[in-house]
Amino acid sequence: MSYLDMTLLRFSTAGSVDDGKSTLIGRLLYDTKSIFEDQYQALEKSSNLRGEEEVNLALLTDGLKAEREQGITIDVAYRYFATPKRKFIIADTPGHIQYTRNMVTGASTANLAIVLVDARKGVLEQTKRHSFISSLLGIPHLVVCINKMDLVDYSEEVYEKIRSEFEDFGARLAINDIRFIPISALKGDNVVTRSEHTPWYGGATLLNVLENVHIGSDNNLVDCRFPVQFVVRPNTDEYHDYRGYSGRVAGGVWKVGDEVKVLPSGWNSKVKSIDTYGKSLQEAFPPMSVTITLEDDIDISRGDMLVRPNNQPEQTQDLDLMVCWFNPVALKLNGKYAIHHTSKAARCVVKKILYKVNVNNLHRDQEDKTVGMNDIARISVRTTAPLFVDRYTRNRNTGSLILIDEATNETVGAAMVLN
Image 1 (cartoon, helix red, strand yellow):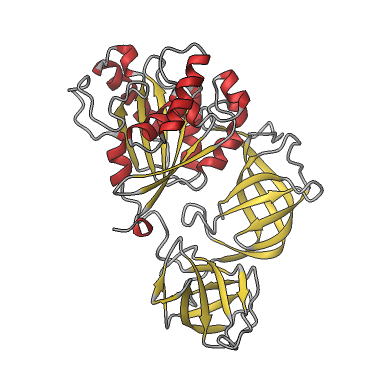
Image 2 (cartoon, rainbow, N blue to C red; image 1 turned 90 degrees about the horizontal axis):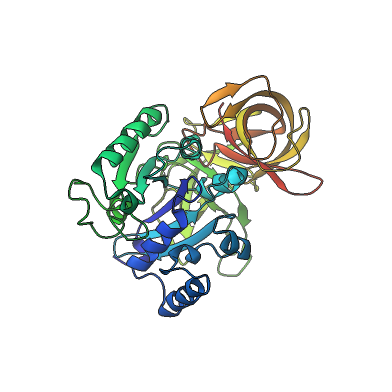
């Protein structure tokens, strides 16, 4: 299998402060030999200067000066590595409550979330908060790593107690695949290699789970969705009459000869070819980026969507959203914002703020309607143009959008469609 043909797993880390998220990622990178010798020497030097007894692997991801000084993660750090079986993109997300927006950003594209629990402290409010957000974001796989087992003498009793406590809470989450692993990120127990300290644990190591978890069915392969990003007109002698529509497949399996309907115009045609760099394909599926040509000349532009005639998304200007607010300036009732959904841009007005979610106990707060930074709330908006949406739980690509402050051009909220 070539490197280009390997599957890609995106995963994020989550959990309370000081549960060892950055150390775990450092351990994964170190034990899979994914860091260079000079990087390790720099870590040794930095750790010695800080007076630490062991090499601090957390410094691999905590790159900001403020992060290193405080020993915390503030912003999302992305790291890449590969094993012979799979490629990985890691998002190391912050644990502090005031960085919930960073955690949402890092986890929004993940196939799997690793939630760390300190074996000494058990399941905390932040553990529940991050697990709920992972569920809200539609992450299909959750791995609960009960960390710092070396500090509780690798006690099976402690592990089982935390596992039972989390299972009671996890039953309320919309995640079907939850696994538990006792680890020590600092010592490397059950991260890449099995630990001799936990003979009572018969499950897989963390790396084994990451390499083998099935993600092929995570994408929606039923509902064909192709948002057009760009119209390709080379105007060269070789491709004189070529007109293709470029974008990223957001759902379904597209094949040459398939019937398509163009939204919003409603014109029908058939797929003439599916092209990618240097070659033509017989089919395309998420998350491939391709150029589709049609048999008929139809006026299609950026923001339009190709779908199947008998399987269409909802066309609506009224959206029911769950929003995570990113901005220090609170969400305004009747406020106007720019809205970006797939490749389409429009404007919207906030019609209702229905409730805020208390992410620590999952209760709905219908009294306090002030949605500030890091808050999660359910709102209703009306857009200036119809959008072609699916429920977020059905398709994460066509069921997500962002809100933008038109005055500052800042992204102020990320939202999931509940229609």
